[in-house]
Length: 143
Image (cartoon, rainbow, N blue to C red; front, side, top):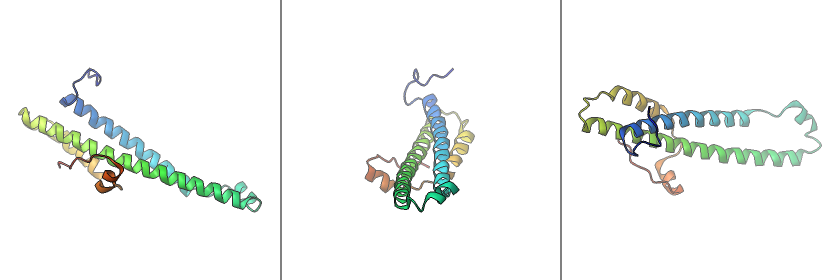
C-alpha cells in the first residue's frame, strides 16, 4: 500500500498521488464556488423584505458587506483552482517524463491523457500574470 508520507518526494508514486490530491481538491473548490454563487443569487427571504422598511440602511450595509466578503472569497477560490490546475498538470508532465525515461512504452499514457482532459476542461479565471502579481511562481505548461 502506498503511503505518501513514507514515499520519496518526486517519485512517480508521489506524483500520481499528488495528481489525485489536486483532482479531489479541484472538486471541493468547485463545490464551494457553486455554493457561493447560490448564496449570492438567492433573493432575500419574505420576512426580511417585510422588515426592510424599518432598517433598510442597516440591512443594505450588511448586504453590501456580505457581497464584498463573498466576492473576495470567490476570488480566492478561483486563484486556488488555477493553482491546483497548474500543479496537477505539472505532476502529469512529471509522470509522462518518468514513464518515457524508464521505457515503460507509454503504459500510463491513457491515464495521463484522461487526467489531462479533466484539467484542461477546468476553467481558469485567473491568468498567469495575475498569479505572478500575487507572488506565486508559475511553471510553464508542458502540454
